[in-house]
Image (cartoon, rainbow, N blue to C red; front, side, top):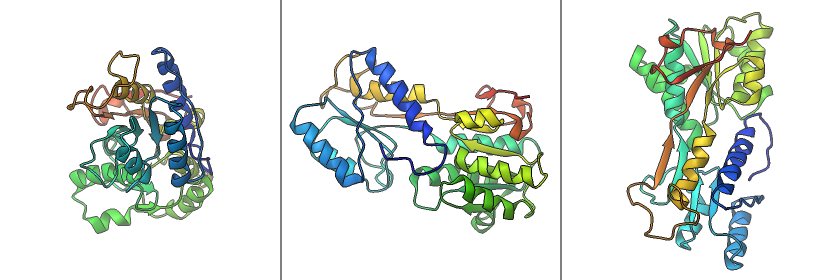
Length: 293
């Protein structure tokens, strides 16, 4: 696991690790946690653990484009599964589980469109993050389907910053008078900063939606997309060990048709998007409405 440098959305990996450890224990397996300073250091640890027969398999988190960790594990035929897709390598055949960020942000955007809003902005990370780019694509698709926007018009509604509550707050201070009707954010960290700015500007009725459904989102009444990490943890173990197995499957033992899991997230509606009726937005039955007073 990488060290957390900023933001509140880092708690997602903590929740995933807890769910994974709990579910692995039911299969008589233990999760061993290691940290690394960079991908090369992580590969060195893989090699040491593999050579010492200290583990049965690896779970890799935080995948990125052309990930050297994935290349090494695949080349060494070491059993592993990644939480995150093989960005930029769509033909990669290794085991992976991920959350459908495209679907989650698409649903969040449709929720706001269903309330009659038209100028919905997107606050995201710099280009080049597979996860961030995929979440923006969900917003862009919903906006294009509904309003026929061009790519240049979508860019005009997009703001990109690093994962930082203070940066999001400063960015929203400039955006709050730009004519936007609402804002969809790539993470709860950015949504929290945006929410602080609109409140300070006296725009408490300005809708903001985040992603990750962190405890902070619940505490401040922020609508957010829930990753459903229990399902992610279950998918991780099913890929490695089968539906109910108690040992890691070897090459060729698993089903070739079931090497990936893409988990559909759900939108949790709270006060920051104004308690709009769930039926107004997105796919019926896939929302969780949690009204905060």
